[in-house]
Image (cartoon, rainbow, N blue to C red; front, side, top):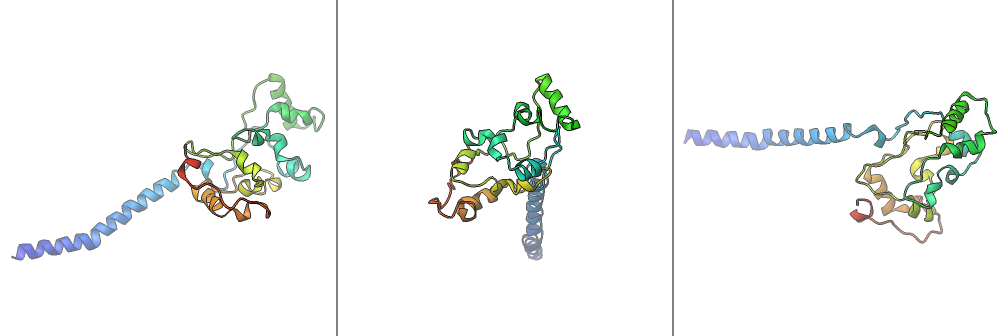
Length: 194
């Protein structure tokens, strides 16, 4: 009878103290590993070094060059696209031609090699995103990309976590023009995961 009583106390001890502590430790480990192993490119504040410095503060900011001029895929394809060297040389064949960075750009242009810009805004491979419906709904670029026209070095202003996208799809009041007929975006899994 004493052995049964002792095993009952052991069971209570394990079920009330050890098991919850173990479950919390396992859950905490899973969350921490998931959070801290997230690639930098998905994190808010990510600002990779580019092969040639480019100031968005100058180009779309001061000079008021529209986003669509350089990122011309935004209206006709899923991805906004990164400008080609030819696009840059449309202006820089006559503008600031003696700048060391523009000389480097001109050398890349003459070599006919592509310029390997480092992508700032990227999503995990399992996420499908199309710029076109967002642009056609008149959602401005700054909603997701931040005040790019004030950034000398572009950085990821918004975390690329699903909660940010769902928050806007559920309540797009801040993203849409006041006269928009759109009340929300799709929330089903297949809208973004294909």
